[in-house]
Length: 391
Ligand code: AMP
Image 1 (spheres, rainbow, N blue to C red):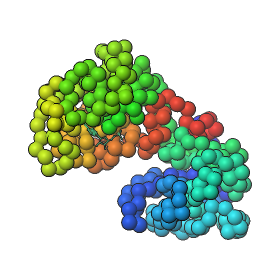
Image 2: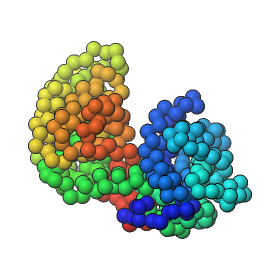
Image 3: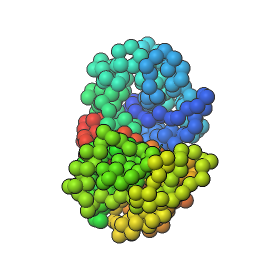
Image 4: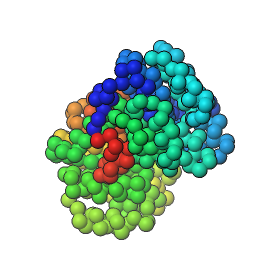
Protein backbone atom coordinates (compact mmCIF):
# COMPACT_ATOMS: atom_id res chain seq x y z
CA UNK A 1 0.00 0.00 0.00
CA UNK A 2 1.31 3.42 -0.93
CA UNK A 3 1.27 5.83 2.02
CA UNK A 4 1.59 9.58 2.40
CA UNK A 5 5.30 9.20 3.11
CA UNK A 6 5.82 7.68 -0.34
CA UNK A 7 4.60 10.84 -2.08
CA UNK A 8 6.30 14.16 -2.49
CA UNK A 9 3.75 16.59 -1.08
CA UNK A 10 6.10 19.49 -0.41
CA UNK A 11 4.42 22.76 -1.48
CA UNK A 12 1.73 20.73 -3.25
CA UNK A 13 -2.02 21.08 -3.01
CA UNK A 14 -3.05 17.98 -1.11
CA UNK A 15 -6.63 16.74 -0.94
CA UNK A 16 -7.17 14.73 2.23
CA UNK A 17 -10.32 12.63 2.58
CA UNK A 18 -10.93 12.51 6.32
CA UNK A 19 -13.63 10.78 8.34
CA UNK A 20 -15.29 13.60 10.29
CA UNK A 21 -18.52 11.62 10.55
CA UNK A 22 -18.93 12.49 14.24
CA UNK A 23 -22.04 11.84 16.35
CA UNK A 24 -24.03 15.06 16.82
CA UNK A 25 -26.94 15.78 19.16
CA UNK A 26 -28.73 19.11 19.56
CA UNK A 27 -26.02 20.86 17.56
CA UNK A 28 -23.17 19.49 19.73
CA UNK A 29 -20.45 17.00 18.83
CA UNK A 30 -20.79 14.11 21.30
CA UNK A 31 -17.48 12.42 20.55
CA UNK A 32 -14.56 14.06 18.74
CA UNK A 33 -12.41 10.91 18.46
CA UNK A 34 -12.65 10.86 14.68
CA UNK A 35 -11.41 14.44 14.42
CA UNK A 36 -8.47 13.61 16.71
CA UNK A 37 -7.65 10.54 14.61
CA UNK A 38 -7.25 12.76 11.53
CA UNK A 39 -4.65 15.08 13.08
CA UNK A 40 -1.52 13.07 12.38
CA UNK A 41 -1.99 13.18 8.62
CA UNK A 42 -3.03 16.84 8.53
CA UNK A 43 -0.09 17.84 10.74
CA UNK A 44 2.30 15.93 8.51
CA UNK A 45 0.96 17.76 5.45
CA UNK A 46 1.32 21.09 7.30
CA UNK A 47 4.93 20.26 8.15
CA UNK A 48 5.50 19.60 4.44
CA UNK A 49 4.23 23.10 3.58
CA UNK A 50 1.28 21.70 1.67
CA UNK A 51 -1.90 23.55 0.81
CA UNK A 52 -4.56 21.36 2.34
CA UNK A 53 -8.09 20.69 1.09
CA UNK A 54 -10.12 18.56 3.50
CA UNK A 55 -13.12 16.49 2.41
CA UNK A 56 -15.45 14.42 4.56
CA UNK A 57 -18.98 13.10 4.68
CA UNK A 58 -21.25 13.57 7.69
CA UNK A 59 -24.35 11.45 8.21
CA UNK A 60 -26.69 10.71 5.34
CA UNK A 61 -28.40 13.21 3.08
CA UNK A 62 -31.75 12.09 1.75
CA UNK A 63 -33.94 15.18 2.23
CA UNK A 64 -33.56 18.97 2.42
CA UNK A 65 -33.92 18.71 6.22
CA UNK A 66 -30.85 16.47 6.40
CA UNK A 67 -28.71 19.32 5.08
CA UNK A 68 -28.90 21.46 8.23
CA UNK A 69 -28.53 18.41 10.50
CA UNK A 70 -25.33 17.35 8.75
CA UNK A 71 -23.63 20.66 8.12
CA UNK A 72 -19.88 20.02 8.32
CA UNK A 73 -19.24 23.60 9.47
CA UNK A 74 -19.50 22.28 13.02
CA UNK A 75 -16.16 20.49 12.63
CA UNK A 76 -14.04 23.46 11.51
CA UNK A 77 -13.69 25.27 14.89
CA UNK A 78 -12.97 22.00 16.71
CA UNK A 79 -10.28 21.10 14.23
CA UNK A 80 -8.89 24.61 14.39
CA UNK A 81 -8.49 24.33 18.16
CA UNK A 82 -6.77 20.97 17.90
CA UNK A 83 -4.39 22.10 15.15
CA UNK A 84 -3.77 25.59 16.63
CA UNK A 85 -4.14 27.06 13.18
CA UNK A 86 -6.89 28.57 11.03
CA UNK A 87 -9.24 26.14 9.30
CA UNK A 88 -11.31 27.87 6.62
CA UNK A 89 -14.73 26.42 5.93
CA UNK A 90 -16.51 26.75 2.59
CA UNK A 91 -20.22 26.12 2.44
CA UNK A 92 -19.88 24.53 -0.98
CA UNK A 93 -18.76 21.23 -2.44
CA UNK A 94 -17.88 22.68 -5.86
CA UNK A 95 -18.22 25.76 -8.03
CA UNK A 96 -16.45 29.14 -8.34
CA UNK A 97 -16.31 29.70 -4.53
CA UNK A 98 -14.25 26.54 -4.18
CA UNK A 99 -12.12 27.08 -7.28
CA UNK A 100 -11.29 30.72 -6.42
CA UNK A 101 -10.38 29.83 -2.86
CA UNK A 102 -8.15 26.94 -3.91
CA UNK A 103 -6.51 29.06 -6.60
CA UNK A 104 -5.47 31.66 -3.99
CA UNK A 105 -4.28 29.25 -1.29
CA UNK A 106 -0.83 29.69 0.22
CA UNK A 107 1.33 27.01 1.82
CA UNK A 108 -0.04 25.73 5.16
CA UNK A 109 -3.54 27.02 4.35
CA UNK A 110 -6.28 24.58 5.31
CA UNK A 111 -9.76 24.57 3.85
CA UNK A 112 -12.62 22.24 4.70
CA UNK A 113 -15.34 21.89 2.06
CA UNK A 114 -18.99 21.23 2.88
CA UNK A 115 -20.18 17.65 3.54
CA UNK A 116 -19.44 15.54 0.45
CA UNK A 117 -22.86 13.91 0.81
CA UNK A 118 -24.59 17.21 0.09
CA UNK A 119 -23.95 15.94 -3.44
CA UNK A 120 -26.35 13.06 -2.72
CA UNK A 121 -29.43 15.25 -2.52
CA UNK A 122 -29.79 15.41 -6.27
CA UNK A 123 -28.80 12.20 -7.96
CA UNK A 124 -26.72 10.48 -5.25
CA UNK A 125 -23.58 11.81 -6.88
CA UNK A 126 -21.17 11.18 -3.98
CA UNK A 127 -22.46 7.76 -2.91
CA UNK A 128 -22.80 6.37 -6.41
CA UNK A 129 -19.31 7.54 -7.37
CA UNK A 130 -20.43 9.93 -10.08
CA UNK A 131 -17.52 10.01 -12.53
CA UNK A 132 -17.72 13.71 -13.23
CA UNK A 133 -17.74 14.60 -9.52
CA UNK A 134 -14.68 12.47 -8.71
CA UNK A 135 -12.85 14.02 -11.64
CA UNK A 136 -13.86 17.51 -10.52
CA UNK A 137 -12.60 17.05 -6.95
CA UNK A 138 -9.39 15.49 -8.28
CA UNK A 139 -8.86 18.59 -10.44
CA UNK A 140 -8.57 20.75 -7.31
CA UNK A 141 -5.28 19.23 -6.11
CA UNK A 142 -1.94 17.70 -7.01
CA UNK A 143 -2.20 14.56 -4.87
CA UNK A 144 -4.87 12.70 -2.92
CA UNK A 145 -4.57 11.17 0.54
CA UNK A 146 -7.28 8.79 1.67
CA UNK A 147 -7.42 8.79 5.46
CA UNK A 148 -11.10 7.87 5.88
CA UNK A 149 -10.95 4.29 7.07
CA UNK A 150 -14.68 4.30 7.92
CA UNK A 151 -15.61 4.49 4.22
CA UNK A 152 -12.71 2.51 2.76
CA UNK A 153 -15.12 -0.33 1.86
CA UNK A 154 -17.29 2.01 -0.23
CA UNK A 155 -16.87 3.20 -3.77
CA UNK A 156 -17.73 6.89 -3.49
CA UNK A 157 -16.74 9.94 -5.55
CA UNK A 158 -14.69 11.35 -2.64
CA UNK A 159 -12.49 8.26 -2.42
CA UNK A 160 -12.51 5.91 -5.44
CA UNK A 161 -13.62 8.75 -7.74
CA UNK A 162 -10.60 10.89 -6.83
CA UNK A 163 -8.21 7.94 -6.64
CA UNK A 164 -9.11 7.05 -10.23
CA UNK A 165 -8.03 10.51 -11.40
CA UNK A 166 -5.10 11.53 -9.20
CA UNK A 167 -1.91 10.13 -7.68
CA UNK A 168 -3.11 8.73 -4.35
CA UNK A 169 -1.87 7.23 -1.12
CA UNK A 170 -3.14 6.24 2.32
CA UNK A 171 -2.97 8.56 5.31
CA UNK A 172 -1.61 7.49 8.68
CA UNK A 173 -4.97 6.36 10.08
CA UNK A 174 -5.70 4.09 7.12
CA UNK A 175 -2.14 2.78 7.30
CA UNK A 176 -2.48 2.00 11.03
CA UNK A 177 -5.81 0.22 10.56
CA UNK A 178 -4.68 -1.86 7.60
CA UNK A 179 -1.40 -2.83 9.27
CA UNK A 180 -3.28 -4.07 12.33
CA UNK A 181 -6.01 -5.88 10.44
CA UNK A 182 -3.65 -7.46 7.95
CA UNK A 183 -1.72 -9.01 10.82
CA UNK A 184 -4.78 -11.29 11.01
CA UNK A 185 -4.01 -12.68 7.56
CA UNK A 186 -1.19 -14.71 9.08
CA UNK A 187 -2.16 -14.85 12.76
CA UNK A 188 -0.16 -16.52 15.47
CA UNK A 189 -2.11 -19.53 16.73
CA UNK A 190 -4.08 -20.29 18.79
CA UNK A 191 -6.24 -17.71 17.01
CA UNK A 192 -9.62 -17.09 18.63
CA UNK A 193 -12.58 -15.06 17.45
CA UNK A 194 -15.13 -13.61 19.88
CA UNK A 195 -18.47 -12.67 18.34
CA UNK A 196 -21.43 -11.06 20.04
CA UNK A 197 -24.03 -8.40 19.46
CA UNK A 198 -27.61 -8.71 18.43
CA UNK A 199 -27.95 -10.42 15.10
CA UNK A 200 -26.57 -13.59 13.54
CA UNK A 201 -27.29 -12.15 10.09
CA UNK A 202 -24.73 -9.34 10.57
CA UNK A 203 -21.98 -11.81 11.41
CA UNK A 204 -22.54 -14.63 8.91
CA UNK A 205 -19.89 -13.30 6.54
CA UNK A 206 -17.36 -13.12 9.39
CA UNK A 207 -18.19 -16.62 10.64
CA UNK A 208 -17.92 -18.12 7.15
CA UNK A 209 -14.58 -16.44 6.49
CA UNK A 210 -12.95 -17.06 9.87
CA UNK A 211 -14.25 -20.51 10.79
CA UNK A 212 -11.54 -22.21 8.75
CA UNK A 213 -8.81 -19.75 9.79
CA UNK A 214 -9.45 -19.55 13.54
CA UNK A 215 -9.02 -22.29 16.10
CA UNK A 216 -12.22 -21.40 17.97
CA UNK A 217 -15.11 -18.98 17.66
CA UNK A 218 -16.62 -18.01 21.02
CA UNK A 219 -20.18 -16.77 20.56
CA UNK A 220 -22.02 -14.60 23.10
CA UNK A 221 -24.53 -11.75 22.98
CA UNK A 222 -28.03 -12.01 21.54
CA UNK A 223 -26.78 -14.00 18.55
CA UNK A 224 -25.86 -16.98 20.77
CA UNK A 225 -29.54 -17.81 21.31
CA UNK A 226 -30.19 -18.65 17.66
CA UNK A 227 -27.31 -21.15 17.89
CA UNK A 228 -28.65 -22.54 21.18
CA UNK A 229 -32.15 -22.87 19.77
CA UNK A 230 -30.67 -24.65 16.75
CA UNK A 231 -29.33 -27.16 19.29
CA UNK A 232 -32.89 -27.46 20.69
CA UNK A 233 -32.25 -25.66 23.98
CA UNK A 234 -35.11 -23.70 25.53
CA UNK A 235 -34.16 -20.00 25.28
CA UNK A 236 -37.36 -18.39 26.58
CA UNK A 237 -37.98 -14.91 25.26
CA UNK A 238 -34.35 -14.31 24.25
CA UNK A 239 -33.46 -12.83 20.89
CA UNK A 240 -33.81 -15.51 18.19
CA UNK A 241 -33.40 -15.00 14.49
CA UNK A 242 -35.73 -17.73 13.17
CA UNK A 243 -34.67 -17.20 9.57
CA UNK A 244 -31.11 -18.24 10.43
CA UNK A 245 -31.82 -21.36 12.49
CA UNK A 246 -30.97 -23.61 9.54
CA UNK A 247 -27.70 -21.76 8.95
CA UNK A 248 -26.76 -22.23 12.62
CA UNK A 249 -27.66 -25.94 12.51
CA UNK A 250 -25.51 -26.48 9.43
CA UNK A 251 -22.46 -24.64 10.69
CA UNK A 252 -22.73 -26.34 14.09
CA UNK A 253 -22.90 -29.74 12.37
CA UNK A 254 -19.82 -28.94 10.34
CA UNK A 255 -17.75 -27.28 13.06
CA UNK A 256 -19.19 -28.50 16.38
CA UNK A 257 -15.73 -28.58 18.00
CA UNK A 258 -14.82 -25.03 16.91
CA UNK A 259 -17.93 -23.08 17.90
CA UNK A 260 -18.09 -22.50 21.64
CA UNK A 261 -21.44 -21.36 23.05
CA UNK A 262 -22.41 -19.93 26.46
CA UNK A 263 -23.46 -22.31 29.26
CA UNK A 264 -25.21 -19.82 31.55
CA UNK A 265 -26.93 -16.47 31.30
CA UNK A 266 -27.93 -13.33 33.18
CA UNK A 267 -31.69 -13.18 32.66
CA UNK A 268 -34.46 -10.64 33.19
CA UNK A 269 -38.03 -10.23 31.93
CA UNK A 270 -37.12 -7.14 29.85
CA UNK A 271 -34.08 -5.08 28.89
CA UNK A 272 -33.92 -2.40 31.56
CA UNK A 273 -31.67 -1.05 34.28
CA UNK A 274 -34.26 -1.68 36.97
CA UNK A 275 -35.19 -5.37 36.81
CA UNK A 276 -33.79 -7.86 39.28
CA UNK A 277 -31.78 -10.46 37.39
CA UNK A 278 -31.35 -14.21 37.74
CA UNK A 279 -28.60 -16.56 36.59
CA UNK A 280 -29.86 -19.46 34.53
CA UNK A 281 -28.09 -22.51 33.11
CA UNK A 282 -28.50 -24.13 29.68
CA UNK A 283 -32.15 -24.93 28.97
CA UNK A 284 -33.34 -23.23 32.19
CA UNK A 285 -34.46 -19.87 30.78
CA UNK A 286 -38.20 -19.46 31.50
CA UNK A 287 -40.64 -18.52 28.77
CA UNK A 288 -41.07 -14.97 30.12
CA UNK A 289 -37.32 -14.33 30.53
CA UNK A 290 -34.60 -13.10 28.19
CA UNK A 291 -30.93 -13.99 28.34
CA UNK A 292 -29.23 -10.60 28.35
CA UNK A 293 -25.60 -11.36 29.21
CA UNK A 294 -23.31 -14.36 29.52
CA UNK A 295 -23.17 -15.77 33.06
CA UNK A 296 -20.19 -16.45 35.39
CA UNK A 297 -19.62 -20.04 34.23
CA UNK A 298 -19.47 -18.85 30.63
CA UNK A 299 -16.99 -16.11 31.54
CA UNK A 300 -14.91 -18.86 33.12
CA UNK A 301 -15.25 -21.16 30.13
CA UNK A 302 -14.41 -18.43 27.59
CA UNK A 303 -11.44 -17.32 29.74
CA UNK A 304 -10.06 -20.86 29.71
CA UNK A 305 -10.10 -20.87 25.92
CA UNK A 306 -8.63 -17.37 25.76
CA UNK A 307 -5.84 -18.17 28.25
CA UNK A 308 -3.69 -19.87 25.61
CA UNK A 309 -4.64 -17.56 22.71
CA UNK A 310 -1.89 -15.75 20.82
CA UNK A 311 -4.28 -13.75 18.64
CA UNK A 312 -7.85 -12.65 19.32
CA UNK A 313 -10.28 -10.67 17.22
CA UNK A 314 -13.49 -9.49 18.88
CA UNK A 315 -16.64 -8.02 17.37
CA UNK A 316 -19.88 -7.46 19.29
CA UNK A 317 -20.63 -7.22 23.02
CA UNK A 318 -21.43 -10.29 25.16
CA UNK A 319 -24.66 -8.75 26.44
CA UNK A 320 -27.01 -5.80 26.25
CA UNK A 321 -24.07 -3.64 27.19
CA UNK A 322 -25.88 -0.30 27.27
CA UNK A 323 -27.60 -1.46 30.49
CA UNK A 324 -25.61 -1.77 33.69
CA UNK A 325 -26.89 -5.21 34.81
CA UNK A 326 -25.68 -6.75 31.54
CA UNK A 327 -22.13 -5.35 31.27
CA UNK A 328 -20.27 -7.91 33.33
CA UNK A 329 -19.61 -10.46 30.57
CA UNK A 330 -18.10 -7.93 28.16
CA UNK A 331 -16.12 -6.19 30.93
CA UNK A 332 -14.71 -9.44 32.35
CA UNK A 333 -13.48 -10.70 28.97
CA UNK A 334 -12.01 -7.27 28.24
CA UNK A 335 -10.13 -7.28 31.58
CA UNK A 336 -8.92 -10.83 30.94
CA UNK A 337 -7.52 -9.97 27.51
CA UNK A 338 -5.92 -6.73 28.72
CA UNK A 339 -4.40 -8.23 31.86
CA UNK A 340 -2.99 -11.23 30.00
CA UNK A 341 -1.58 -9.05 27.27
CA UNK A 342 -3.15 -11.18 24.55
CA UNK A 343 -2.79 -9.61 21.11
CA UNK A 344 -6.36 -8.46 20.59
CA UNK A 345 -8.00 -6.56 17.79
CA UNK A 346 -11.37 -5.08 18.63
CA UNK A 347 -13.65 -3.86 15.86
CA UNK A 348 -17.27 -2.82 15.56
CA UNK A 349 -19.14 0.11 17.10
CA UNK A 350 -20.59 -1.32 20.31
CA UNK A 351 -17.53 -3.29 21.34
CA UNK A 352 -15.39 -0.24 20.74
CA UNK A 353 -17.71 1.85 22.93
CA UNK A 354 -17.35 -0.75 25.69
CA UNK A 355 -13.55 -0.55 25.56
CA UNK A 356 -13.60 3.23 25.54
CA UNK A 357 -15.46 3.15 28.84
CA UNK A 358 -12.39 1.44 30.31
CA UNK A 359 -9.41 3.56 29.24
CA UNK A 360 -7.01 1.79 31.60
CA UNK A 361 -7.78 -1.53 29.87
CA UNK A 362 -7.96 -0.02 26.39
CA UNK A 363 -4.27 0.90 26.51
CA UNK A 364 -3.37 -2.81 26.75
CA UNK A 365 -5.43 -3.73 23.71
CA UNK A 366 -3.27 -4.15 20.60
CA UNK A 367 -5.68 -2.42 18.23
CA UNK A 368 -9.08 -0.80 18.54
CA UNK A 369 -10.45 -0.36 15.05
CA UNK A 370 -12.31 2.84 14.17
CA UNK A 371 -14.26 1.40 11.24
CA UNK A 372 -17.55 -0.43 11.83
CA UNK A 373 -18.62 -1.64 8.39
CA UNK A 374 -15.09 -1.40 6.98
CA UNK A 375 -13.65 -3.62 9.72
CA UNK A 376 -16.45 -6.15 9.35
CA UNK A 377 -15.93 -6.34 5.60
CA UNK A 378 -12.21 -6.89 6.12
CA UNK A 379 -13.00 -9.71 8.55
CA UNK A 380 -15.42 -11.13 5.97
CA UNK A 381 -12.45 -11.39 3.60
CA UNK A 382 -13.88 -8.88 1.14
CA UNK A 383 -11.81 -6.48 -0.94
CA UNK A 384 -12.07 -2.94 0.43
CA UNK A 385 -13.05 -0.87 -2.60
CA UNK A 386 -11.10 2.32 -1.95
CA UNK A 387 -8.03 0.38 -0.85
CA UNK A 388 -7.55 -1.43 -4.15
CA UNK A 389 -6.35 1.71 -5.92
CA UNK A 390 -3.83 2.50 -3.16
CA UNK A 391 -2.09 -0.85 -3.57
P1 AMP B 1 -24.20 -5.39 17.07
O1 AMP B 1 -24.47 -4.04 16.51
O2 AMP B 1 -24.69 -6.53 16.23
O3 AMP B 1 -22.76 -5.58 17.52
O4 AMP B 1 -25.09 -5.51 18.35
C1 AMP B 1 -24.94 -4.69 19.47
C2 AMP B 1 -26.23 -4.70 20.20
O5 AMP B 1 -26.53 -6.01 20.63
C3 AMP B 1 -26.22 -3.84 21.44
O6 AMP B 1 -27.20 -2.87 21.29
C4 AMP B 1 -26.58 -4.81 22.55
O7 AMP B 1 -27.48 -4.25 23.49
C5 AMP B 1 -27.28 -5.92 21.81
N1 AMP B 1 -27.21 -7.20 22.55
C6 AMP B 1 -26.15 -7.87 22.94
N2 AMP B 1 -26.49 -8.99 23.61
C7 AMP B 1 -27.84 -9.02 23.66
C8 AMP B 1 -28.78 -9.92 24.19
N3 AMP B 1 -28.42 -11.01 24.87
N4 AMP B 1 -30.09 -9.62 24.03
C9 AMP B 1 -30.47 -8.51 23.37
N5 AMP B 1 -29.62 -7.62 22.83
C10 AMP B 1 -28.30 -7.86 22.97
